[in-house]
Length: 187
Length: 289
Ligand SMILES: Cc1cc2nc3c(=O)[nH]c(=O)nc-3n(C[C@H](O)[C@H](O)[C@H](O)COP(=O)(O)OP(=O)(O)OC[C@H]3O[C@@H](n4cnc5c(N)ncnc54)[C@H](O)[C@@H]3O)c2cc1C
Ligand code: FES
Ligand code: FES
Image (cartoon, rainbow over all chains, first blue to last red; front, side, top):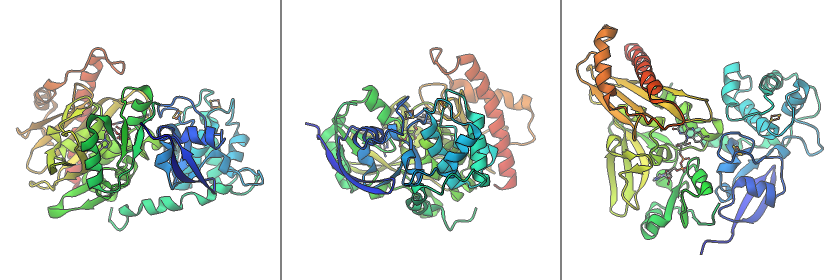
C-alpha cells in the first residue's frame, strides 16, 4: 500500500507551515490546492513554460517538476510573497505594469519569479543575461520585449515607487550557503 | 500521478538496501526533471520512489581527489557545474554543455548523474565527459565499482548499472599526456525547452590525440579517437581533415522518425559542429586554457 500522506514543514512567503501532503503531489499542487496560493499557474506540466516558477531556497524551479515532499524543510517564495504585506508592489512588479509587460497575465507570476531570481543573481543584467535568465518562461501574448524592458527598468532602480521590497527580500539566504563549494578556487 | 511510497534514505547503506529489496518496483529520484514527467505520463510506475538527495555520499559538490582526479558528486546540478571555476578551467566543454541544458529552472534541479542515468542519446553532458575519459562510480549490494563512461551507455534509457546499483559520483581522471582542452557544440530547435538535435564535444591533448564524442544521432552517445594526429595538428588542411571526420562520423545513424530533425540535417550538422568544436579546442590547447 502506498503511503497516504507525509508530514512536511515548509516556510512559504515567510510563514512556517506544517502540513500533510500526498507523496505523489507536486509542490505546485500543494501550493495551489492545499495552501490556496493560486498565483503559481499550472500549464504544460513538463517543465517547458515556466508558468509554475517559484523559488525554493532561493533557486528558481518549475514547481510542476518538484514533489512537495522534496521541499520538506525548504524556504519557498511564490508570487504572492513579492509584494509587501500591505499590498505595495515590489519594484519588479511595478516595472512590469509600467512597461506594459502584462497582457492576459497568465504567464506573469512565473515571469516575475524568474525575473526576481535573475536580478538577485545579476543586479544589472546584460541583454544576453536577461534572454538566458528568462528562456524558461513562455508568454503566449508575446510580451517578451516589454518584459525584458521591465527587467532593465527594475535593474536601473527607476521603477515607479509603488512600494518597498516585498517579503521576497528574505529568500536567498540558504542559497548563498549552497554556493560555497565553488569558493576559494582560482579561476 | 499514480500514488507511490516516497523514501528518503539518509545513508548509502539504507538506499542500496532499499533498492536491492524492492528491485524493479523502486526508482531513484534525483532532480526529477526526467523522472517526474514519466511518473506523470505513466511511462514509469514505481511502487517506491527513492529520493537520494540526502545521502551524504551523493551530495552535490566538486572536489579534487587522489592523483588530481576531479570528483563530481552525483547530485551536483547543472547550474553548479556550469559556474564552477575548476570545471570552467579544466573541463571547458563540460561547463559549456551544462550551461545549455534546458532553462535556468531545469539547470537548478537537473543533476549530472541523472543526465547520465537517464541515458538519453541526446544527453548534453555525455560527449564532453566521454572526451575527458570520465568514470562512473557506482555503489550496489556488492560494493563499489568504477565504470568507464564509454561502457556505461547501452541505448536510450538503458545503462550497464546492475539492479540495485546507484551512481555515487563521476570522476574525471587527470590525463597522463597532459591536460585535455575541450569544447562542446550543439544544435537545438529552441533553447530552454528542447533536447539537442546534435550534441558534440572535442578534446585534444599535447600528444596529438584527438577525441570526438557525439550524441542524438543514434541509440547512444559515441566516442571516437583520431590517432593519426591530423585533427590535432592546427596546421592540417580541411582536405586532410575531411576523410578523418568521415571515419569518426561513420557510426552516426540518426533515426528517420525523429520529430526533432531529419537525418540529412543531423549528419550535415555533425560535420559543421565537429569542425567548430575542433577549432575551439585547438585554440584552447594553444592558449593553455
Ligand atoms: C524542459 C526540459 C528541458 C531539458 N533540456 C535538456 C537539455 O537541453 N539537455 C539535456 O541533456 N537534458 C535536458 N533535459 C533532461 C533532464 O533535465 C536531464 O537529463 C537531467 O540531467 C536529468 O537529471 P535529474 O537529476 O533531473 O534526473 P531524474 O529525473 O531525477 O532521474 C533521471 C533518471 O536517472 C535515474 N537516476 C538519477 N540519479 C541517479 C543515481 N545517482 N543513480 C542511479 N540512477 C539515477 C532515475 O532513476 C531516472 O531514471 C531537459 C528536461 C526538461 C524537462
Ligand atoms: S507548468 Fe510547470 S513548466 Fe509549465
Ligand atoms: S501575458 Fe498572456 S501569456 Fe504572457
